[in-house]
Length: 373
Image (cartoon, rainbow, N blue to C red; front, side, top):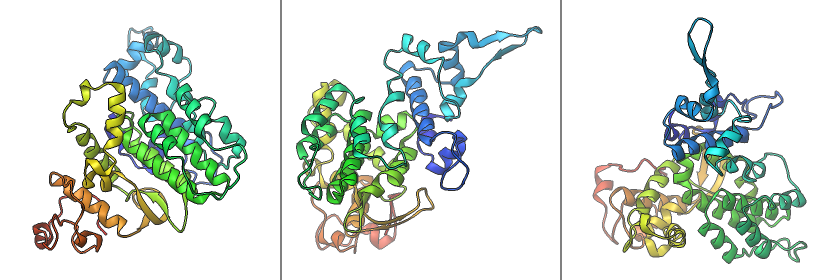
């Protein structure tokens, strides 16, 4: 299975492929949490992308040449552990030293605090603050300098530190995602539901900005569904939680990747790291176009009954209409201007100008594979 195929598996399918029992469907004690499989798959596919080695066989030949040999009859054999790493069935141990020697830093993702922050077990504030320590130094310093105070005067407060949130987005990485998840869970632990909701939005915005990396690492959809199931339910406020219509994230990721190739004035590949960070974040704002804004930003999910393709969602309107309109517009080449009133009323999700019924609506055609209310 290639990285893109793995990245498009549902969380249920990922459980089955990795050999982990789905805790939602069994009462048996868990051997390990599914995050062990997620981080292993991400590590293996990221290593594959970094080295250009296209198969499990080639990876094993590169990093574990001693795993190949001949028996007494002259028949060749090899251990074939790497197909297990790519599927999440095996967890790497002895091979890590060889990987670090040839690809310094490649193992860092395995110890990222994101995986611990995604536990389904309740965590106290002290436990959550301890997860800040292993973060990348720049992000750790940022969170400690601008993060939650040790003894918040108003635990029910609803104001988010926008400078901190925007700074984490500009540094979009596994560490930035981990920091946003930790801050969401701290807000939830303090009973600050409005603050948790806002951090939930930034968690999903960072997910969009990381979508190419997560698809390359083979875990985009299963990771999103795990975050929906374990983290975003903690961000519920006024009867809603942030989310995307189920089944649209791959389409969102495709359009976001396309948007990053269409930046005016300078090719993305020739930009400095700072310019790239600003460009990634700018695609999620109004100035880049209302189609991008409504497609790439999460909406309010009023109810979410189970993860996976079979789960039922109840989506808020006009949020869902605006999101679908944006995906429709991007499928037709884009629409930078504000959506017409017909869209906000849910009457025409293909409208491009005020007072005109779209040809697509008249013909009943649908170009978008996204959610249709």
